[in-house]
Amino acid sequence: MSLTLHSYWRATAPYRVRIGLQLKGLDYGYVAVNLLEGNQHQAAYRAVNPQRLTPALDIGDGEILTQSLAILEWLDETHPEPALLPKTALDRARVRAMADIVACDIHPLNNMRVNRALEAMEVSAPRRAKWVERWIVDGFQTLEPMVAKYGQGFAFGDTPTLADCCLIPQVYSAQRYKVDLEAFPAIRAVAEHAAQHHAFIAAHPDNQPDAKPV
Image (cartoon, rainbow, N blue to C red; front, side, top):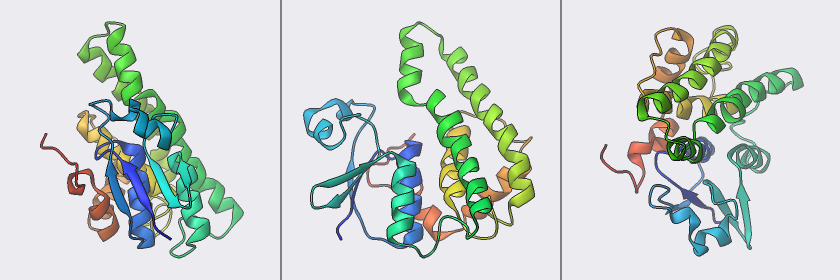
């Protein structure tokens, strides 16, 4: 099976999928989609993903998967080891809840489309930054006690899960926007631990072929 990931280096949703691919030890091709330059709106990419978002994972035979969590679950079902979800239904629900706090509650309010919409409504840059901070802090306040309770190096237990695939890119985003993470020691500890893991290193935005100096 040949895999090709359509990705933008510092977007957090494809970052999640890169972590999953690296954890699974899968080789994949990389096609850069420059969101800042509007590549996602070009006809060639609309044919790949009509929603005009990243990521999109081409799995061959004309099949293309979209939406980061759906892709990660597909990876886990088709390449079960190492597992991204725990063994019991209760623990799987907990990990999915942690991932959903990031993917459903934090990220949708802070992505590029929202930022550009706020800018179009003449919301100032400082107020947009406060908007981003408000939703990251809100989500992290919910995640912090969960990570503190269930984490043992990673967000849930001592091995990476779906929760880490979502959490680590969101920490990266928080740092980009200079959100103060002092109140979240459990989350910071997971991020520091993940930073030493080969899969998270390989998936990091700075290590992508389309990375730009910032």
